[in-house]
Image 1 (cartoon, rainbow, N blue to C red):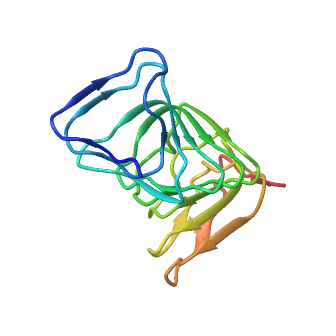
Image 2 (cartoon, rainbow, N blue to C red):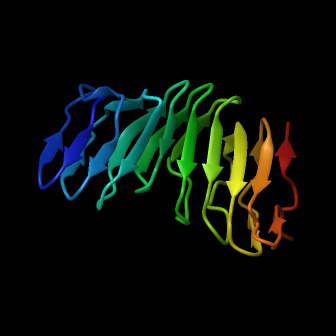
Length: 173
């Protein structure tokens, strides 16, 4: 599979020429990936975005059948989860990646953080798994629409609140 490794290396993209499809892991250990307007599609079975440095993507797409774990949370302008894809958000970062988020109704987003669910107001999730293994946690009013299944796991004897007094509606279709 394809593995991108950036160790004190700079990669600049003009237009949408790199790298197209990644079937392996994407690891950034201090290099610079300048995305330009490129589209990077993760198209392997099980992949990771990892490393000591976050990568900024112009457009990041997780393809059908691919499960990608954002061990190092990426910065993304356009984040797409295609039908049948899965993205795992294993850290308690404050935001769901993507300025613009397009999640297919049959995609899956799994959040494994603790505390408040990341800011996702206005995001329409496909299937959503909240896998939070630490005490009492909540969506903090940041969750508004789930088009498929909502699964809450591993609250470790605590509870998980979906709404707040400011945002009292969660739409689950």
